[in-house]
Length: 348
Image (cartoon, rainbow, N blue to C red; front, top):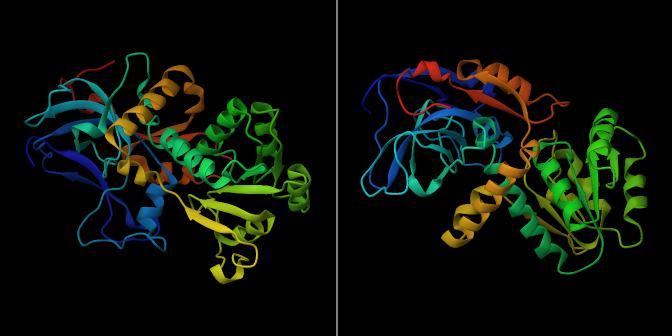
């Protein structure tokens, strides 16, 4: 650590975020090492995965001793660079991912995890342009593998979520037979307005399962893209055609479904877990192509990276409450006022 103080949100144990997270002012700032950059963050999103990491859901790594800062994505300005960094310089706007600890005013990240932000892309859009678009690509690759050229519909839960809307936009573009599930009638109406060619069904209706089967037709549901999980998993498995695949990438729902209650063996079903954190296992060339896709989306369709609201970093509790609202549209952001760091870096 060196230099002035910095604010950071931390937790020393796992649990309900509102109870275990606190705002600290650290006495110094980290320094970049070889191949690293120090980024002064302006904006960072509140993703469901960030909250899951704080809560310590089953299957996630246990909390290590000491303080931990949530967040893996954000945008900011390069403050300084370490040795052997030639692609970025101080004052340059960048988006970062994966960069553990972005719920702080500064973060050190490997230079190859910092993406230069084009001038025409806003700070807010840049803060959202990596995790969700890369999740979309990850899901579509898993979907393509699961379909194996077979005919049939795809069902997705939480279709009104930020990732759900990206999946819907891609489905319209690529003529994918997608059926959208949402929680409420008002959410269904929003989706019908946005994507009038895609069937949308509200799970608050008693006959939602029958309506899914009707929309799927004789071919049935070949793949489910699910970020709800919990008690809903059994219903989703029952809706799958024999030999179908349930792709799980989140756990927004309540309750649990024991694995032995799913007809996996009898109906040759597959359950596959997917996470965007696996993205770093792709080759540098593949990652560069994926980032180019994300940049193109940020430039040309920023409305798909919608912001629900922005809160100061110190107001993280209010931001978390907003992020959990069922009727929320878009992603909640945590911001750092530029005036808090006068005279440092570049501004827009």
